[in-house]
Image (cartoon, rainbow, N blue to C red; front, side, top):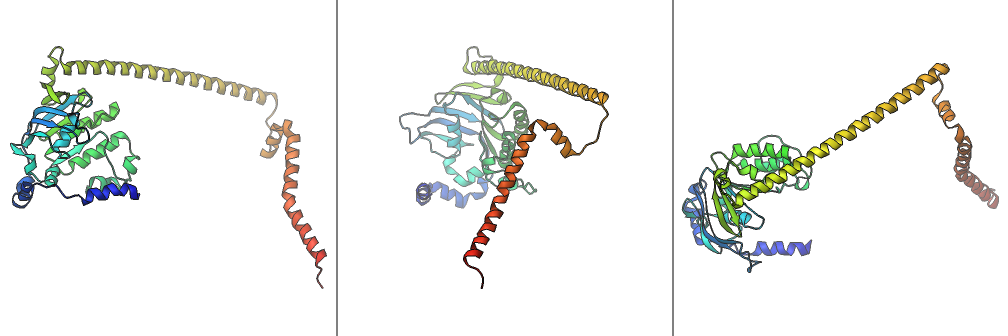
Length: 353
């Protein structure tokens, strides 16, 4: 624990890297920050992770997420989608370029107050080992303990709690990082309906691998190797022959068709197995009923004690049962006999006067 705590204490002891303009905003313009709204613009943003300086992540990235609209970012893994959200949340600072909200640099806002206007729903929501009430801080009695990292809940339940956690403060900006990718079809439909309702009249940035979830987005940006290669609505991008987005959609449709075929085949196999099991059970029950009917017709039923019936059923094992009973008696009598002999020895060796 001490070794693990060293890095934590080192982080706590670091000086807070707060810009001077942040402090001024905190003191002079506090009320206006709580009402942040407007277009989110990335203007020629470049970024390199400090631990991987030889591998640029974003290259002259430019995009605009319009206010009160849904903007989707799609692309292959490692193209920089999640990095865009990390920069907007100010987990990192861009190497060059600028990120603005309604024309104002995000560095002009205090980090804490900026994040108070942002709701985030990630692919794997983080839940604490406390009640639902404490996870989302609602004024109702949701006292169910969710377990460490929400282990007591299903994927859909965890996602819905994460959505509640994001929406309870009524954020101006909503960031969805593959919020439905880990769900099954039924849970995905439920969560997606909730998302569609929540995204209305709210500036939303969606990262999605399942492209069926962002077909209603107002603007879709296709990223590749840290840059925007295509942009438009679902309809305009699908009309672009040979485009990256069109090929991604077709690949997912083919994969979904194959998955549906596999599901249908597995369901048919389970149905056949169930039918065979039912037929076998029916035959077994009918055979048992036939045997019982023959026995009842051959001789009258006689009521017997349960112990006698058990003995009769185990008549072939009587010798084994008898030997076992004798062995149990001898084993049980060993301790009392030992105590009796010990008492006799003591009495003989040291008689009472």
